Length: 145
Image 1: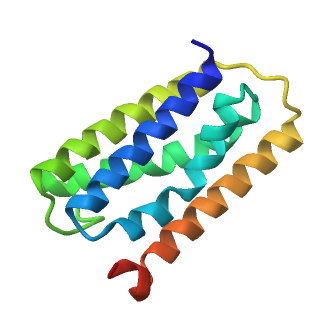
Image 2: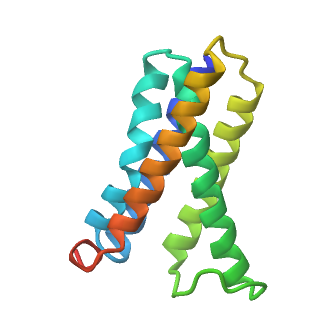
């Protein structure tokens, strides 16, 4: 399996796990919005494009950080997030964490021929879109859905 395909499957696992969280908790629209940026590296990865690495990294790091924050809260070590997490949601945090780890490790081991301005631009754009999608998902009209 190529590295781009591994990254695509990692993004797909995160998307599916977040959809499951949406189905058992706050509603799916919120989580559908949150996952929109992951579709870019998913499509690029399945097409074998080396930009998949650069678009995936910020998204995967973002979601890995969110999962770490959730577990720090659940363990009572830090309160960067709050809330009640069902057993299904807890299980999905583990799935997301593993998918992110696999994707990040794969991306770090993958040497691409993408020029550094394109790589940096892709990462900045991806991170900006991920933050924006997450912020939009917290708006009252979407959050309640």
